Length: 187
Image: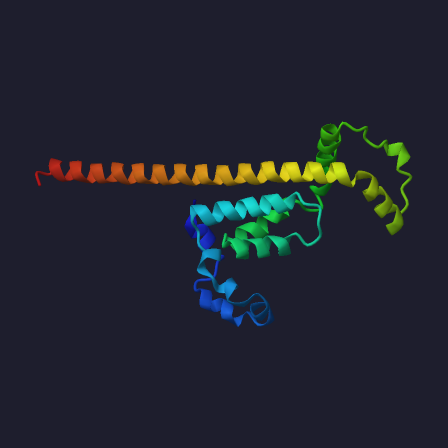
């Protein structure tokens, strides 16, 4: 993975985090843990899994649980927090609709007809509708979250590994060219 790209946006020294004020006092020394900011295969893939898992969860303020879980598991904090934004106001509809449909299919239920919704812009209407759909929605979201997190984790590890293997192969080719040039010059 291109470490130089990510390093531009990460703190140079975890001591810089000591100036965090109240957030620093709440979370304590855990935020200064260098493992939260390291760019290695384990921490990035773990942050990817955390972020993608929580992106599917229909909960408010998904970034907070992502940050807390990344801190507790010592995974890459920025990756976990940024990937939560896979779910955003533009993607909520398709994501949760597909999760609901998957849940309906798995529970072998009939989907609610749009004509039966009788939309009212009231909090009571919203909670009544959520009571009717929460089981298939939560089942679908959980299943898609596990699939996404697992796929993101595995894909990140595979791509990282392939990048390292190609980098090593390129280094060997360069070394071989230097040795051959040196031999050709008679050295």
